[in-house]
Amino acid sequence: MRYNVVSGAKEILNKSEYLVKNPEKNKNNWNKVFGNNNKINLELGMGRGSFIIEMALQNPQINYIGLELDISQTATAIKNIRDRRIPNLRFINADASLLANFFGKEIDTIYLTFSEPWPKRQDEKKRFTHINYLKIYDRIFKKNKHIILKTDNKILFASSLESLSSYWYTFDKVSLDLHRDERNIKNIMTDFEKEYFKEKRNIYYLDATFKN
Ligand SMILES: C[S@@+](CC[C@H](N)C(=O)[O-])C[C@H]1O[C@@H](n2cnc3c(N)ncnc32)[C@H](O)[C@@H]1O
Image (cartoon, rainbow, N blue to C red):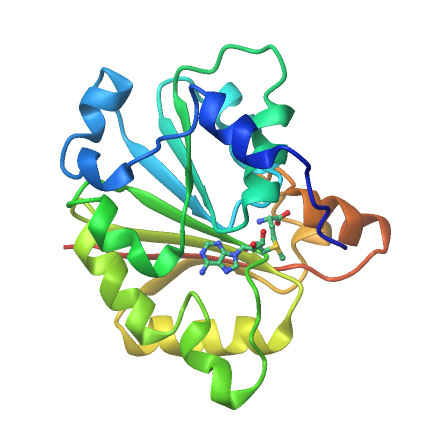
């Protein structure tokens, strides 16, 4: 799937009430941003945002934050909200490596949805399940750690199983073919996933926890 460049993206971001402009100012205070003490779940690399928008709509008792590096993708996610009012949703336009600047121990679940696979060995540190990222997540998870990952990439999936298990996560669910899994795993599709679904590609899925 190609990334589209959105003209006027900066302005769309500046005007949006959903975009948190200086996320570091809210560190340890996200309950004030949402006006409640509900759980906060975070998607890294949300792209056009369909997944996190739908999650927020279906689960008003949970707060959702979509983080995305690319300004055009973030602008598209803002546009995709359309005229709906979704008080339990916010976006951050930033690099995921800076997460610990934005959050204290405030996050309940992290979604890694079709993250860049970085298949070459020299790039493996950039994978969102590399141990360096797992250490960053330690700093922002509230108590228990909970990661849900979906990908079509075998290398990313295999390396994620390895790094998560060596970091003492346990797996509540693993599927090598999410859409044809007989357990009917509850699932909301992301934008990339919708394309892959049409192409009948296998989607790998894991739900991992570390309980403190
Ligand atoms: C393959 S797309 C998947 C988008 C969306 N999750 C989906 O499934 O439709 C990966 C997204 O991650 C974003 N991304 C890549 N590296 C990132 C980083 N370091 N921090 C935040 N977002 C990142 C990209 O800009 C892109 O939008």
